[in-house]
Length: 143
Ligand code: ZN
Image (tube, rainbow, N blue to C red; front, side, top):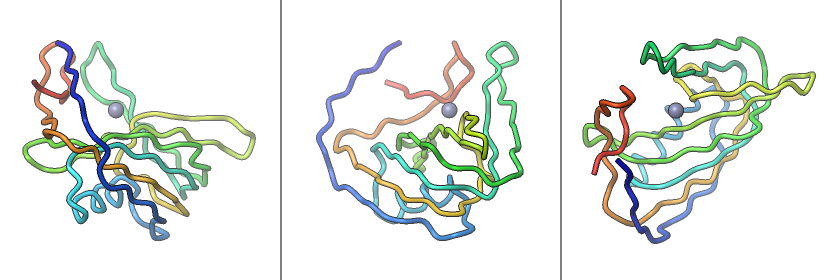
């Protein structure tokens, strides 16, 4: 089932995360503090280590990859919505190593910031709530 919403631009935030914080948790906390329940975000910088997920479609579960080394954040792209009435950031990350190789996946808790600059853009409109999706097994947006 597809969903199409028309939204209007809301407030925009730009800033830098603190050294050593959990990337996903820090981005989520900013959205909660600033009352953003619908929006988009992007970020770049570097991490001390990363934990990224790959959704195994056949098994219907995430497999996680731990990258225990410094990496560049080439890009974080994500959205903000709600799940169980709580603010949820869903983000994917592309990371680069010292030989220019790229790794990427679903941004998971356990990715630790070395330095990170972000932009968060609020979208004004009815919140999109996540719920269990039978076709995929994922917590997708519900109508
Ligand atoms: Zn994802």
